[in-house]
Image 1 (cartoon, rainbow, N blue to C red):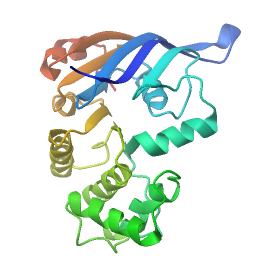
Image 2 (cartoon, helix red, strand yellow):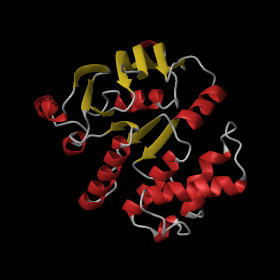
Image 3 (spheres, one colour):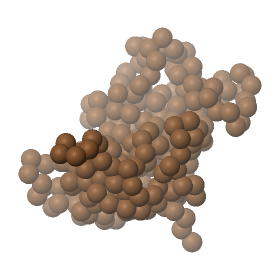
Image 4 (cartoon, one colour):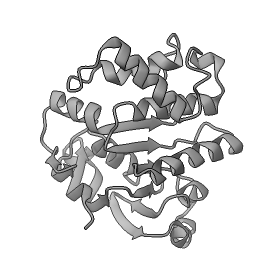
Length: 247
């Protein structure tokens, strides 16, 4: 029996009020099972970034419900959301978001410093960070700073950081957006390896070729889900029909 890791019900998000109100999400209901690899696509202004922020507990919906790993997080306080983020979510961003003065190992162990549940010693934190870097093929780069690494290597550090707390889900926002084609393919291969090991991945992308790596694609337009299909290639017509393409 499958288990919902993510379940949203009639999510809405409104910025502003009155005549200047912007309806970023208009009743989004979706579920992601444990172990799925899902891509979220849509044109600029479709609501995909807003949805990703809510799924990542970076923001709260205006209305509706969001249940993450059995816990309704829709109305949690900012501090409670921060705790959920640290325990259950690993983030991979387009711009890597690494601290330039820290080595790869120290960047990776940062989430462990805010984890009040495992209570690891400094040595255990460092060992876990090294293991995470080794798992993404960077065991020989643990003492390198970001400016000593290629873009692809920096993204691997970011993925190791996302994995170090053993999260329930990886949220990847345009993970190949700043990479050349070869480095982007290497990162997608790594995400496939993680998925094959049982990691749940939700990825925002505007590139159809990247979305085709996912098992399933959710396509947003004007704050609503207009397509939710199991095979990425099946959304090509939807993507191409959008004026100017999804961005």
